[in-house]
Length: 576
Ligand code: GLC
Image (cartoon, rainbow, N blue to C red; front, top):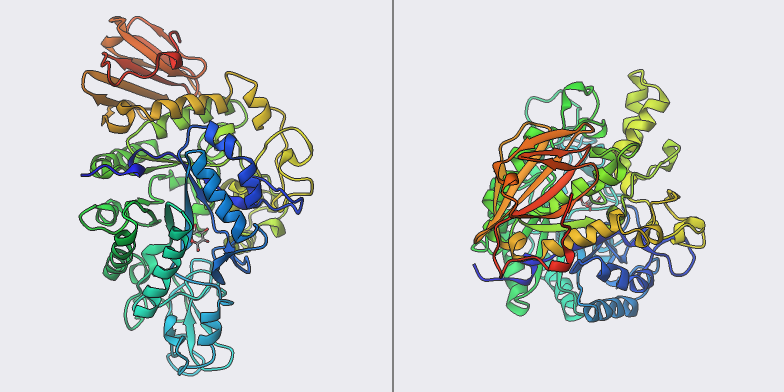
């Protein structure tokens, strides 16, 4: 396939609310991001993905857009956005925006018009249905944010469809006017210089015609109905039309689709260049947990669990094999919709540094495009949210009440929510040890973890910090061995995750220990002495053909040489 710039991209996700506040209102903003561009560049990333910044009532932190052509005053002005794009480009950084195309805010003028009645020209921008009989919902489908997907219009008798909050009505993509309107928005921002979009929730752009009930459900019960509103065949058709039209004008645009529930077959289809839809997708299917100890009466994803390393390995290597040739799968550990990885899969009490470094090594040296959530590079852990009313995630309250009714203690439920909720990952960036961690001069909107060693200033000064480890790692990630090399999972026990990347005569062995105990592994090549230790974290050692990885150890060894592929000498570490 032809080479595209994004195939070697490293994306840094900036959650603008939480990154840097420049005007002292406790909310991060675009001028804050501008101030921090040299920090972002110093990480060795090449793309900034900004979560939503368009005008919004902020029911769902900007994923409810009421004007796609302007910036929410909370974040700044359109001039700030233009300046950010221009300056980022000067720093050699590309910028992609979050583009919400499945739904709008109920305050969007299209929806306000649509509410005026069935004859309004904008009525057909949204999805409407009659109740089954007077007072009854059109069907039994549940919204992702709890309750039904249907909301009765205030003045008429119909119901409109909302997969997320009731303030976020879904668009009707079957309407050519909607398709054109969304294309116009994308073009507007491309004209302003953005380099692509993260397409929010695009897999829901089509719903089953006739809105049939999910069968065999007790009357009155509302249930999730993914088979009727996720990954339907027309999604691909809409996406492809949208992408083809945009690429006609902007052949270099990068389109990464959020495809939370897509399995590998769907992901291959969406990102196959011959299909011309997305360039890459972000699935939520990587992280299988051991669910056997969870309470089946409560949502499983809201109960903390251990990563099922065996299942994780099988999934990752399948995604590597089947998506590698398209530029690769997206590689990430966390984002604004899930708890932070080091809290979830590492050990923040005893081995925070080592487990942060191990997780990064494991994930990002695989084939594909890294997506790094701001703060991950300094080992930021979950935000500690003290009381239930401080959670913004709409699911949190429902979970709390249900778990309480089942007899769980308040403390237990809070602990579980803190461990699993998306709010946990949205804490503000920890820049230094000043008040509010250098994020703002006022109390931050989300609360703040203030910790001695886990801020940028401390880690800049420490050669062995997580931050400096990320820099080295991302530097290697950009070398041909790690962008182009083939991927092979190495069979090991379920404590280790090991793989090889090979290009020409050079092979990198990446070996990571997922436990808090030392683990040994054997390799004949260790005795040959013709290898380089490219990266290692703490507690690892090598004796003869036996390698020892300490708790959460990670090591990257390169065998063979290839002049062209060789990583830069100055970045080498020659001993364990
Ligand atoms: C996506 C976003 C999430 C948002 C939802 C609705 O999943 O990542 O934060 O709530 O879409 O737009």
